[in-house]
Length: 211
Image (cartoon, rainbow, N blue to C red; front, side, top):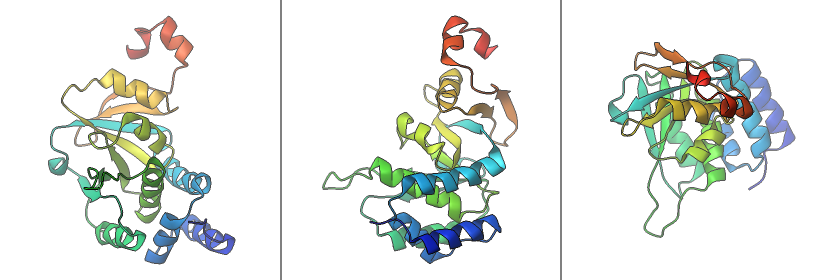
């Protein structure tokens, strides 16, 4: 894989800045590229333009039945063109959160790599309208990957309700320099934890952080 040519990059950047939608060929070029730094920067800028540093999170028991959340499963070995076609087929569906779900490893044991996951989520952020938040399903993605995804377009974490610990999720978001907001299914705020607190302060006064 190679990064998109500079002229292609400039064209994509210009259209995003103008508020235009990217086309299928743009999505394929981005998925087939290998410059995560550039791609992540584009996705993060689009994310922060709408959500700032805020990352919302919601405990869920059945992701597919969660109000206002549209899911899409991706699997190892899918061609970029197929993934983009599936994403664009969902772009105009009514939803406030779009949450890709990682499929289990295939019969050969192959899994989607972390770099591929970051690329895919960043491309989702760039293909979907800014009014749609990109969410990360923590039932199919490890927390370490979810933290990285907060710099690649994700602004909502969908956390399994079983064993849900709101303070732990807040810490997870803080450690990624985000502002955690525990939300309700209707997007009303349950608790806004405020900006990231330095870890040294959290260790010195652990209770004050959550009160």
